Each structure stands twice: as structure tokens, then as C-alpha cells.
Length: 92
Image 1 (cartoon, one colour):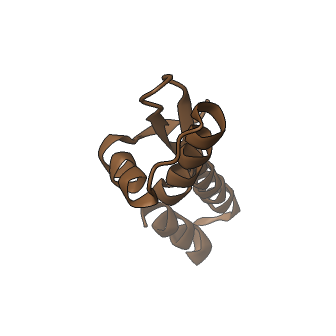
Image 2: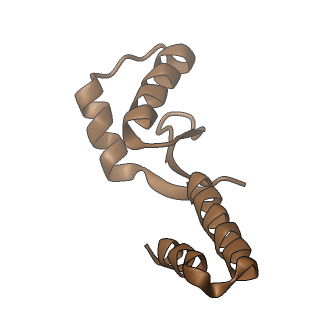
């Protein structure tokens, strides 16, 4: 919302330079949002599993457990594990 207010102020006659700066600030804020991801560590081997959100992270963890450890765990249990153990991290 703050970034949108800057953009609105720039468009209301504050000048072309301020408009460019506001547009750049908004684009920068949007790109920073995409850098965040959800991360969980496999409790069997320690590998970091990453995804954009918890649903995708649960799917990726299930795929990892099946392909690497030949282990299938019920999706509800994995979802609970992800909800309790996953954390936000910045993509580098």
C-alpha cells in the first residue's frame, strides 16, 4: 500500500522524475517479494527443500521422501510437519 501511495502521488502532478522514481520503487518492492520462499529441512537427511508456499513445499517434500528415501507419508501429516517446521528464507 505504501508503494502504491507513492505511485499515486507521482501521477497526480508531482513531476515525471518523481513518477519514474515511484515506478522504480514499486518494481523493486515487487521483485523483493518474489525473492522470499518457504524452506524446510528433511528430517531424514537434512536436505533443504524449497518452494513458493506451504502447499508446494508439502508436495516437494513428499516427492523428496519418495524418491530419495523410498518413504511415503500421508499428505496430511506432511502438511502438519510443514506448517510446524517450515520457515521463510530469502532466495540468494
